[in-house]
Amino acid sequence: MGRLAQLVLGCSVLLLLAAPRPGQALTCAPDEEEISGTCVKRASPSRPAELRPRFEHEYRPPPIGNAIRETGGSIGHLLPFDAGGAASHTTGTLTDVGHLVPVRAYLRSADIPPPSIGAYGVVAFRARPTPATRSRLLMACTSFVASIPPQALIPSSVAVSDQMLTIWPLDNPAAAEAVRDDCNFAIDHYDLFGGDSAIADAEKQGATFGEDGPFLIGWSPSNTRGVPDKLVLVVDMSRYNSQDSFDHAFLFWKQKIVEDPALWRSGFSVEGIRLAVRDFADGYGDTILKAAVSLWKK
Image (tube, rainbow, N blue to C red):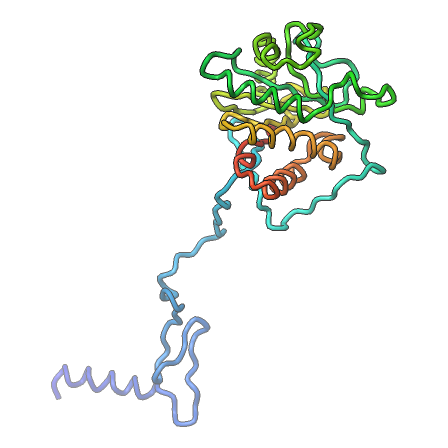
């Protein structure tokens, strides 16, 4: 018998010995299955198991969409609006969280913030009006005046510490034009240092801003301004070009202070602000607002 014939005969004998006897089940490895009397690797519907890559930790990219931003040093972390119920939020009430009354005032930059104020925001310009920017800044002023009651008309029974003050920096707050809310006067006599310093202090806390503005910048409590490890709220209105959009921004600023003091009284709530923006924007169909509101912290 030739050598080749001997090898073929030997292999045949081995296969016969390995084959299961009649009535005996074939035993396959855990990752194999029996097909036509033979053990083969299991396969997924889409790819064979042996071809699928293996990872110690699965990576899932964050949802694409708008976000509230919280920075960690020089790198920002996006906190998506649509949390999908992953985080809970408890709305404060007037019995467990002190009520903050939204008010507005014209102040010189040297007087910002006033003593004992609970929380406050600043309407910040990049520059005084030019022919190219005048109409947008007038719309911002119109919304500011229409949305928020003046501090001078608030009853004296409302303590200053219970007020959320929105400030329009002005070089002469006592002028007759300011008293009657003349928006042409308000933008022409805007106290630019008041806006520049508010932007600079927010940037110390990690905030970034659009090129044009204007901006609403808020601190709660008031002594957190410029403190790197504290939160600062920014509403960037650089993309706004209609009165309706500016109205929504100031209405959001006002309503969420009044309706949910838990967002503000003890410092800003990241999750609370996220849900407030989503609910307000969905209710008004304002997708720009979602992109405009951000919360920052170094």
